[in-house]
Amino acid sequence: MLPIALLPERGSTYALNVDTAFWIIFYLSLVFFVIINVALIVFIIKYRRKPEDEEPGAPISHNTKLEIIWTIIPTILLFVIFWFGYRAYAKVKWPDKKPRLEIKITARQWGWTAEYPDGKKIITGTIKDNRAITEKDFPPIIFVPAGEPVQLLLTSTDVIHSFYVPAFRSKYDAIPGRYTKIWFQAKKPGEYPVFCTEYCGKWHSRMPAKVIALPPKKFDRFINIPVDKFNSTLANMPLDSIYAVLNLSDKEFEEWSGAQEKLLASLTPAERGKLLAQKLCVSCHSLDGSPGIGPTWKGLFGHEVELADGRKVVADENYLRESILDPQAKVVKGFQPVMPSFQGQLTEEQIMDIIEFIKTLK
Ligand code: HEC
Ligand SMILES: [Cu+2]
Image 1 (tube, rainbow, N blue to C red):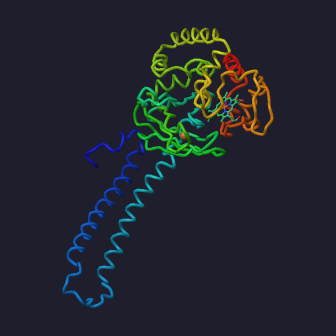
Image 2: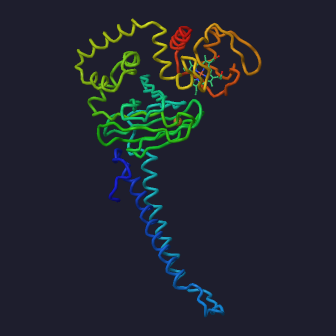
Image 3: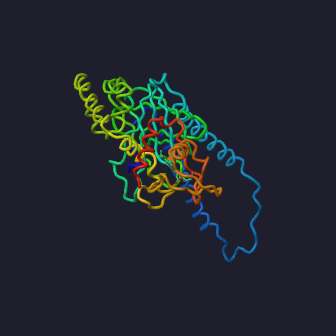
């Protein structure tokens, strides 16, 4: 391998297979690059036309020995490349054993939603400003057990995204209207960054996330947290707090989740809506009147909106609800119809919460 760290650590069971194929192709290319270019330079100098070369030399028809050599050697090398390439492909494509669980990942402009079989849901948002992204900006998107295979079922609500975990050498497109699959097995517990690697619009580089591989015991605790408790509390908390909660004893956990639920119950619908909107909507909608990809929400509620087809409507609750579930039904004048539908992503209660929040933005 090279003396410099070009690739991140190998965090999954098949990372070595992928790297082997990569380095074999890399070094073969390097060797032939040198051979061909040295020969090129030598021939240019040695066989250049000299002043005394008035007449062309005798024609050369062919050289059987040379031709056999330059056919057989590359053929063998191509089989070598095929063998290591296919082995890596097969490993990445087909799990060694049945995955422990399947997690659904939905990409959108610009963030990810993960859903567990029991309904646990984690949503990541957009880092929407121009500062450099740091390690702290990678929120958890999925928790997986280290040492066990996990399957992801990918899709997208709007354009093509790509779910890429460099340390696992796992990368697959998330395509609207279609499901794609990828699996991996983390070798040890740790935190592994996720990037979108299919250019998906303005904030493509700013939808970071993280795969958290937990020790098996911790993962069991995670998976056993009741879904309603998880979704109403932990799902929205920073990683440190989640670790802290996973470390609690059963009794401490009961107390903790009781206290959290009380806290959450004390939020008004508008406050709950604000939390959601900050994750899902503010990458396109400003709250303060400044321009964005979508219209600002400041002063929206109760006012007249001009549509692209010339109609005018008043932005009441029904209009807002329709705009969230079927954004293309009434497109606002001067804007592109690029808003993804949140049909199936938000519950009726969550939609009400967001509407209540929009109402407060006078
Ligand atoms: C990818 C960018 C994008 C995201 C994310 C997005 N929107 Fe939009 N939204 C738009 C665009 C563009 C329009 C204007 C075109 C149209 O009406 O479809 C719009 C229009 C709207 C309107 C109508 C506004 C008006 O002035 O009449 C509402 C309400 C709305 N969005 C709500 C939401 C909510 C709620 C969310 C989050 C759950 C959200 N949007 C997320 C891009 C987005
Ligand atoms: Cu993307």
